[in-house]
Length: 433
Image (cartoon, rainbow, N blue to C red; front, side, top):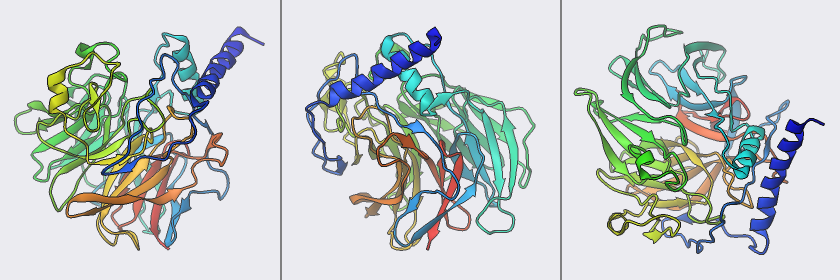
């Protein structure tokens, strides 16, 4: 047996031991959801935090996710390569960002264990760096055409189409391309509008303002809790507002560890986002969250979380803590809620108006959570009640394998709900049964 194989087995064992050590004596913790969650006290996990992820298996044969009662699911497109996010064009074509986290150089034994675990779970590797166009020309709910639309973009994720220009959020830049309706490919070079810093949390989602004058650009942190100093986090852990007329940008809201999905709620007109919170404090501490994004607001990272609960691992800034805005709605600890899409009432039978949320699932738990397409109802512009399931069945019952992992969510031109599955390499389509 080679030294490389032995070392890979060793670092995997380190990850398994971390789970056993951290989980012993804890018992099961109820998921933390809602507008007034009971968040457990922090239990700092030290330098060897809980590390647990299922091995990526994918879907075989007719196996597919389980749709909630009254709904059905079919594969809109298969044989993609790590599809992460989508954008539906005016003619109904669907753009898909195929991208993956890059393997970073490990600096500790735990980093090696993390790297081996992420690779096994298909959470990191060689990124396809491609945008694919899918077309369902005959309207049967299955895309029969697939075209390489744009290639060679570093970890593409976000899209926005405004006044004949397609904007793409790559991990290292905000890019602009000339858009031709009905075209199968863009060969024109990109215009770089804004430099972004790659590494760490790498997804760069985009959404245009309602009047099309501005873009909002979500940028996650480099590290868990500012581990390399706050200078390294400059212009990160925030949502930028980019003015298309002037080319100027500013931080619209900060203290958001890793904001990814963004959507507008039509009644209040506010921008909403889902945010992945910090690791190393327990299965449910703190919860990931769904929140409205207020101009100029600060949401606590890395100094505190939720209702100004201080993270003692971080050098403190009392003024920042005092200014922190509490998020609106808890989504459970380490659910890795990445996708966000507003669903008008009646989109899915039996579901009111609200947000569909792709919960990718994360690693810092003894009992896995997420791995579903969830729904949160809204009333009077605010999230209410507990989350409901739209799609489940992405994990094996023993949590050893993942058949798929939900990411981006979009509303198709025909009213169906589309969800990207980056382990199954599928775009799933959900409608009424």
